[in-house]
Amino acid sequence: MKTRIAILLTAVMVLAPEFRSSPPAPLELARTISMPGIGGRFDFFGIDLKGHRLFVTPLDNKTVEVYDLNTAKLIHSIPGIVKPHAVFYREDRDQIFVTDGPAGSVKVFSGKNYDLVKTVEPLPAPDGGLYDPATRYLYVITGGEGAKLDYSLIAAVDTDKAEHLGDIRIEGGTMEEMRIEKSSSRLFVVNREKNRIEILDRQKRSVIGNWPLTLCKVPVGLAMDESNRRLFVGCRSEMMVVLDSTSGKEITSFPLSKGIDGMAYDPARKRIYAEANTGAIDMFEEVDPDHYRSVGTIPIGSPAKPGLFVPELSRYFVAVPQHGEVDAAVLEYKVQ
Image 1 (cartoon, rainbow, N blue to C red):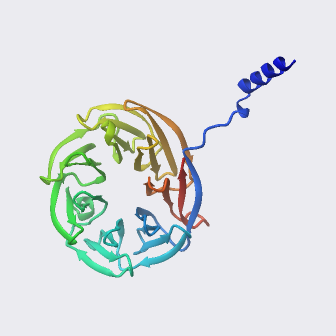
Image 2: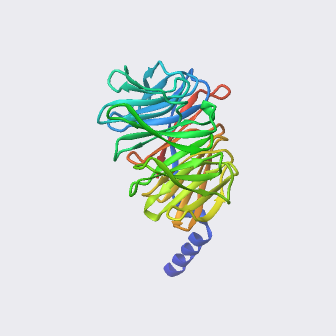
Image 3: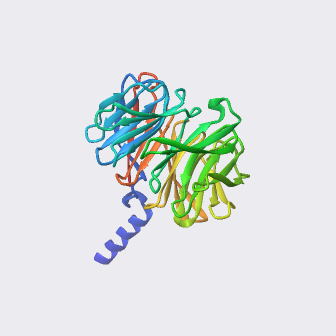
């Protein structure tokens, strides 16, 4: 009798999936940080790990909003910014760097009292930025359509001295995300207008090549798995393309949600997170360097931009603008 019962229970477990525990979702909403009174779109996040602060840039508010990640409360609104785009916090100097497009500058604020410390100018319509911890340079996308130019410039800003060191010129009026290759002097830049990836040499401050994209159109997002020599390019044609970062060869492609904006690679879990300004977060798993599979899409219902993956906290932050009667907010996801 006991043997028959054991066999019956085994059959039930096999035939009834609901009895088996399902794996946890890659991202689980941990909390919503409400931002009442903030209208319009957002652009970039910054993070202070030691001080538990999140920096948020509402484009039309003329401020950088500073939130306490322990309490989810607003600490301070940094004023005096015409239109904030990128924000970067340098912990060892306790300074906040903000690109201000219409003002043509990078503004440096004290992380202690939020006073303006220095202004780096003139820079033509600065937008996105990327920090290189090896040189302590901040690379800033300038020029292009925002400055009414048919070419763009990647400005190198020395964050030790808060000085503009020089520029790298790229043909094309719209540059998007950038990624630094830590093992070399290469900097990858998404050239949206030319539908290609630009390869820059950070030491020589020059363009050393480019890789045209044939499997997708209107590239915007960029993420990188440096250990496996892979670049992930998200395009507005609702496709992601995987490139070999040694040769530029297109390895594979797969569908994305409409309106891709930013992307991040999670090396510990071998995942790619991609937020779309049509209101979704796509998640993919790297089976091996040449094969990938979807592990779900989170519908948000409003534009999801920007996104910030913080591996040290196992958190993924996404900003959503005010819509209807719902306040603007930062959605904080736990990465599982």
